[in-house]
Length: 68
Image (tube, rainbow, N blue to C red):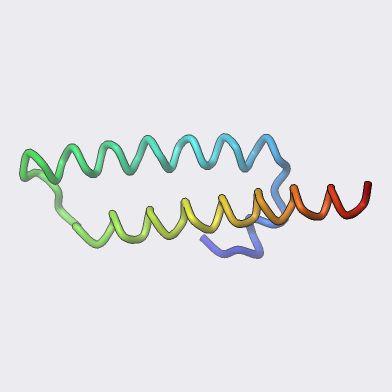
């Protein structure tokens, strides 16, 4: 997922995306614990996606504050 794609999303879409990524990370960690994880690098990718979404959310908050 690219940051440019995330910047085009609305606030509600970003929140739902963040929630789904956190659920996916939880499931991946659970699979890792019980040794059923096929691709351990997926955890790293999901963490980075979560960070990207949180960054875009924060940028949107700051731009709203600057406009007010």
